[in-house]
Image (cartoon, rainbow, N blue to C red; front, side):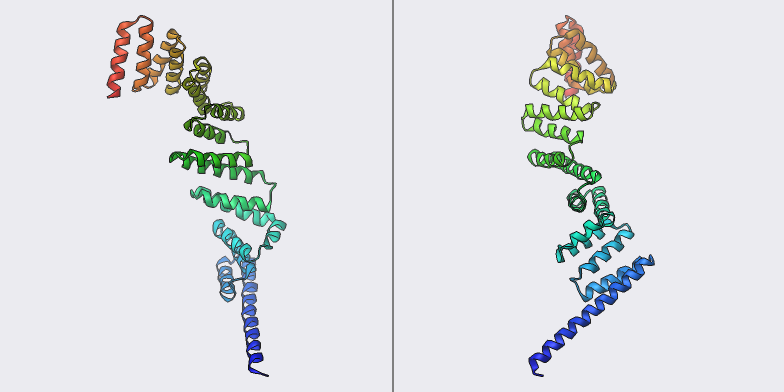
Length: 309
């Protein structure tokens, strides 16, 4: 035997020894897993990975063991590592969705609850890749998109928020909240007609969506369509008679429509519910003045000025 052949044999035997150790650890880990001794199983699967870091099966079984401990995010990480090593393992996952879909679904829920919306988004997408028929995953993916949009709206990144919302609506088009937030974004970038359509879609999905009625009414006021705003604010207070802001804007709509007597009734109710809103007193002052109630108008304007200080 020449030196080169000898080295090749040593390499082959070395590899076989490593793979043999990994196989032993993998077998032992499965036995411990069957016995519900999860810590021992994890120890064996980690030893298998120390012997062969590219053992996709060891990653899968380690992930399955973490899932038994309800550590779903950690479990999904191991399943992802297995896919990186062998993309063909997706076929394994798809053959047993009751195991692998459930791991990714629960990982998404776990991460969403922790506020890691991007991580949750990725886990739900993987769950959908395993089983595309799951409506619960589509809904969860849509809700994650809504959560991401809320964060973007908070920093006034409306364009990016719109992208997230459009994606969420495409995946799960039954969420009134997604359409409401879309309307908010469109309002803030001056796309008012599109915003109207978004709020109307939200109301179509949830006829008791008070926020969408309110914002749609506000849009009509901004566009000087005051008569159209009135029934929307009426709906707001129908849904919640204690909504001071709803009463205040209803009064404003009546003032702008020159229905001053009715405006006074709405604005006085708003003051009862919230006596610290300067704009309500200012609009009430206008209504009183137009109705010839000069003393009351003076007092209302005075109070509005005091609250504005």
